[in-house]
Amino acid sequence: MKIGSPKEIFPGEARVSMTPDSALQLQKLGYECLIETGAGKAAGFSDEAYAKAGVTVVENAAALYGSADFIAKVRPPEQSEVELLGPGKTLISFFYPAQNKELLEAANAKGANVIAMDMVPRISRAQKMDALSSMANIAGYRAVIEAGNNFGRFFTGQVTAAGKIPPAKVLVIGAGVAGLAAVGTSVSLGAITYAFDVRPEVAEQIESMGANFVFLDFAGPAQDGAATGGYAAPSSPEFREAQLKKFRELAPDIDIVITTALIPGRDAPKLWLEDMVAAMKPGSVIVDLAAERGGNCDLTVADQKIVSPNGVTVIGYTDFPSRMATQASTLYATNIRHMMTDLTPAKDGVPVHNMDDDVIRGATVTKEGAITYPPPPPKIQ
Ligand code: NAD
Image 1 (spheres, rainbow, N blue to C red):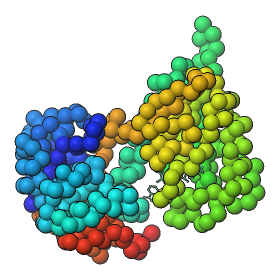
Image 2 (image 1 turned 90 degrees about the horizontal axis):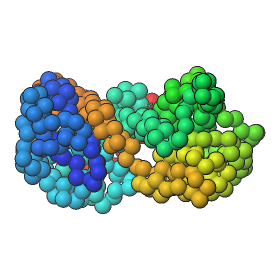
Image 3 (image 1 turned 90 degrees about the vertical axis):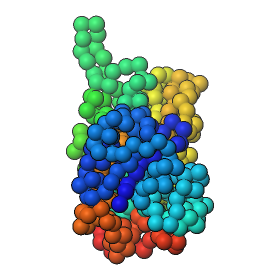
Image 4 (image 1 turned 135 degrees about the vertical axis):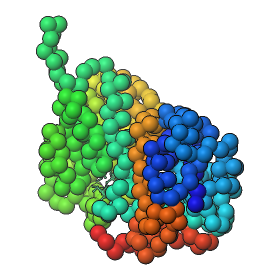
């Protein structure tokens, strides 16, 4: 069978879902690979490099969708792309079915199968396909780089003939995959790094990375409801008050804030409020990785960089993985390749869409004319 990757059409999207290397691996699974001309260009992969790896370069999306059995994409499809799907075709891409109900219905009406990379269950066996984590890791790293690029000082402290330079102080709020990547990057650049999360179990991990966990002066439980599957639940009002009080204390002393706090299925909690921005020193930088979900900072504007009246830069870009398109494409294409490996047990180019497999079942959101989202909870933990 054939697997093909079209050029992403979302404005500014530079990633691609197949690389020459991943194509070689897909061919070992028995698949014939196709790529739309120019699809890898913005990520640094030329048509020639694909051709050299045995990939057939096709002239446009219609030819690609017409010929391929599997269509691998990064972004959820636009309506024009859904139109190109049909029975017997399987789309594999980020899809976010909970937020994209109409899209889900449209793809299903076309009779196509959809495997949503964002729905891969977060169980150990599926880590190799966990594209949310591979992209979050890049976002966390890039957030620190972007902060550094907008910060007029060194991260690390130095003693030079021209004077003593103090280290920068970085606070990371939310220590999931992106937050931990930000902590690691910040520590490696030499900043004094602090991190906070509502899940106290991450404290040890943060300390082991050479950063300081911010403990709250709070005796009660962190959350109203139980946190499910390692994810955060909304904080109780008392906990939130204690958290904001601590952040207010820290604000005048912190140079860079990276916010990554998210609660599944909700808008991002507001944690870095206007008065905290106003208390920061001019030249400080805030990078809000929760911008797409409304932002953790009061001043964040999605996809923009603004400067507050007191000279604090607030960055709300939502395209961090795309800003590192070569790396992001390489990791994402590997996630896709692993999904195809699990779909092709005999490595004979013939997929087995096994709905008894927890991972494949969890990620499949439409199949042969039926909407299969939401999936039952995974059996394996
Ligand atoms: P996420 O993107 O959903 O949220 C980011 C972080 O924000 C989380 O750590 C969350 O606790 C934190 N947060 C929420 N509200 C907050 C608040 N008010 N203040 C401070 N922090 C707040 O998280 P994620 O990166 O998707 O990771 C979530 C969980 O999933 C983690 O426990 C992670 O270890 C786990 N995980 C497991 C696997 C796996 O087993 N394969 C893979 C990835 C992530």
